[in-house]
Length: 159
Image 1 (cartoon, rainbow, N blue to C red):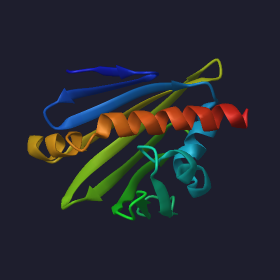
Image 2: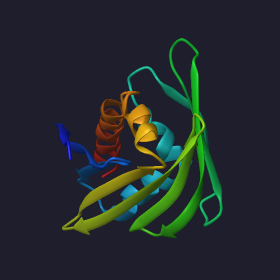
Image 3: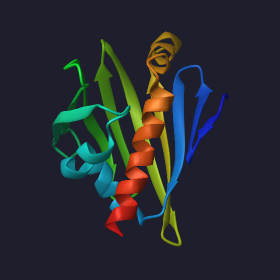
Image 4: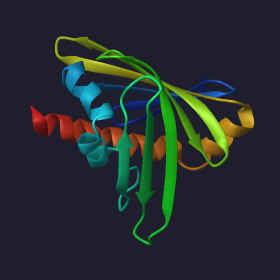
C-alpha cells in the first residue's frame, strides 16, 4: 500500500492490480451520487488537469446500460473512456466497467454518510499489474485528485 495524500483525497494501491481513492465531501450522499450519475453534473467536475473539457458525457443509468466520456485538452487532443453499469444501489454503490486503451477495469464506488458528510471509497481493479501500472503512469493520482477537489467545490456551491 502506497498512500498519497493530497488536499482531501487519499490515493493508494492496495494490491498489484488495484488503485483506490478515499475522499469526504460536505454533502449528503444522494447529492454526491447524483454528481457521479447525472451528465450535467459529471461534466462540471470530472475533468482532471486544468484546461481539459468534456465535450461528450453520455450515460444510460441502468444495469447493463452504457456510458461514454470524451475529454479534450487545449490543443484539441481527445481521450475517450467507456463502460457498462454492472450494479446500481442508489445512493450507496455503483459498479461499472471502464474500457480504454485496449484494457478493461472494474470500478466500484461506495458512498457512506454520517451527519451530512459523505465518504467516498472508490476502487479500480485492473486485469493485470501491468495495466494498473500503465494507468497510474498517466498521472491518474494527480488528475483524479484535481477532479475530486472540483467536485467538492461544486457540491459546496450547491448547498
